[in-house]
Image 1 (tube, rainbow, N blue to C red):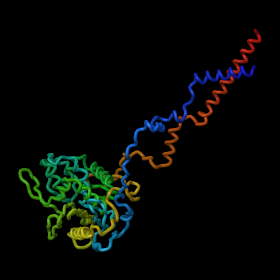
Image 2 (cartoon, one colour):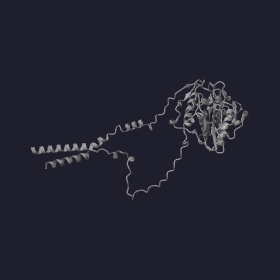
Image 3 (cartoon, helix red, strand yellow):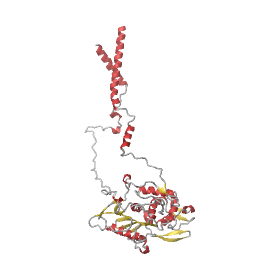
Image 4 (tube, helix red, strand yellow):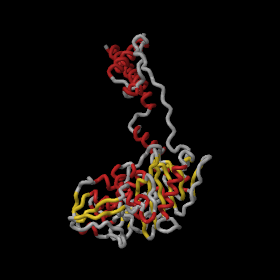
Length: 439
């Protein structure tokens, strides 16, 4: 009888405490609504399942099966199929032939060899600065904008105090390779050193990791280099910009000189047919260059039917000053003849950072306007990407679970509560029995 009464009091006390005190949330209750499994409805009330279209097969990635390291090898790289024409021999230290539409590299020689680019670097300058000013914008040239031009530079004839349209200045850049026009346009867009940094950033955004910009006009400067691969990247990117294409394909233009103007001709002989170099059928442009350190360099593009090719040629070692045009002609002819008869050996499309050349220097480089080279590390750094890093993932999980109660504590709480309730009920029963005896 006594035991029965004690048990009854314990059960009553436990029930009262469990009713008043909130119990711990279970894992299913703590989970957000979005994470809970859907409630199954009876078949009579369930909505009909929507028709699911069959998944389309994922197309293979462009350049799939191409070894990205192949273009870093020395020598000529080509993968001809049966019936393909032989790759022509050219004397240039480095060259690339690529399809401008797909970015596929058809053949190359020492594509990533770092060499001085000369004025072909103006293609990168145009990619960086062209979108920033309206062609019809007028600008009056200050004397300070023409200081620091290298001795022996090619000039279009920009004069202090004269007012020019931006389109005139760009004609001076593309046709006459005018370093004076480059200096003025750079001054309109932040200045010489800022432009060098912006060009460096643009090169990296395009996947041109061999290029180091010191002098935006391409004038020889210590540490300034590019590669046949990067020049082809710049050429291909330029062809996607109608303004760029219009300027680089212009053979002749008038350049203002106050109350009158004079004619200027494009120095790309494949475009104009000057100096005994035959014009190339379907040539679009793009940019030629020369310095005593770089030799002759050229980015050229041509269209034949529905196919557009871009070639880059750096420093031919034979044939004189015009050999760069004839070697580019041979490579263009081969590229059109080899259409569909070669497997690509690489791609001009940007690669992910982890596939970058291990010796690529990511730091933008700039130089004072007097041409003295100097390195400047960009302090701006992107936040670290922790995706795919095991240590970072573990840290995130640890941080997320730092304030969560241990699973064992949550499971033991109901048992502890029950024991406490029983003890309290037994104590209350004992007190009542003692009081009853005294009475």
